[in-house]
Image (cartoon, rainbow, N blue to C red; front, side, top):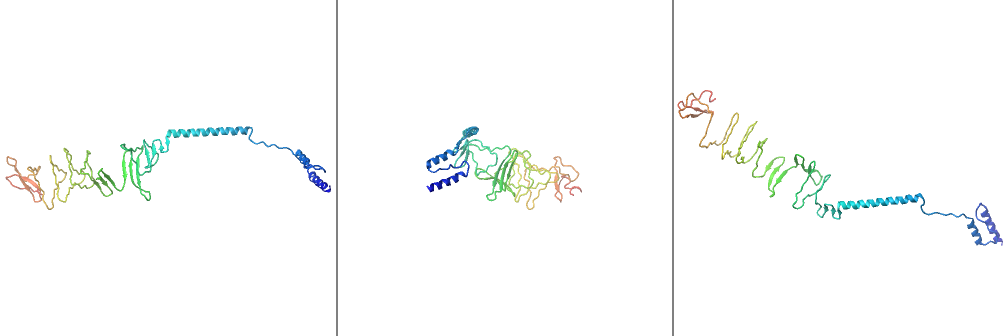
Amino acid sequence: MELAQEESSQLEVMGGGQAGGYTSFTPGAGPSSASSAIRSRQPSVVYKVGIYGWRKRCVYLLILILMAIVIVNISLTIWILRVMNFTLSGMGKLRITSDGIKVDGEAEFLKSIYTAEIRSRRNRALQLQSSQNITLNARSNGLGNVTSRFVVGNRNLVSHNERFIVYDTRDNMLFYADQNEVKIGTEKLTFTGREGAVFDSAIQTPSIIAESGQSLSIESLTGKLNIEAPEGIQLRGGAGQITASCLTGLNFQSTQGKILLDSPRIELKNLPTGSAGTSNSQGVFELCTCENGRLFLAPPESGCQATVDLCT
């Protein structure tokens, strides 16, 4: 009995310290009635779970917009794949094979293309077109510097190489050019220009022949013309004549041999006459020479008598 009174007094002290706190117990009351009294005095709190009002409407609107965007993106992706003809082997006329890339139609490259080989289809021509120019570069393996360049421009064709070589289908050299020399490997070189060919320096060739029915002319307009050969020089006109003309002097010189004029008819025109007199009725003169090699004519009656200024 004393223990129950002590507990009730303790509960009263704990409950009476705060207003609206725990309910005090009276002696003789049971525990069930005390707990029910405590629950009846506590206020009830209700928590609402979810989104309500205008927030709910905004969420639904955002979901609808996202669904519309996803549907549009999927539709555009399917349309692009359909139009561009994307497949596992390539895109459109572009096919990816084990040997490389195969293009069945025309291909346009906006920037540079790097490749080891370009081939056309069988029995089809390969065409390279550009609005400006076409440049082909070959680079060194180590540093990547350009070692050779081939440029096809609007009005010119330029090649930058140490050596330029042209072969035929049988690997015979047709043309060779480098810094030191130029070689032409054909059996016959023909110049078809109206003005012929102009050489700033010497040329070396075993034969110079004109086309059939055409004349051959070798001229030096402002300098000297020298024709030299270690063994011999042959001038031959098979169906016509050979004419050599100059302004001042025409020299034929042989240091160790002779100069042979072999013809059934040799004419020396405009030779001066050595002394006064006339030829015979047939117009025959004597051909005379001075000590310096100058030729002149003389009447047959007077002999080779020259005037003072003839042999000087």
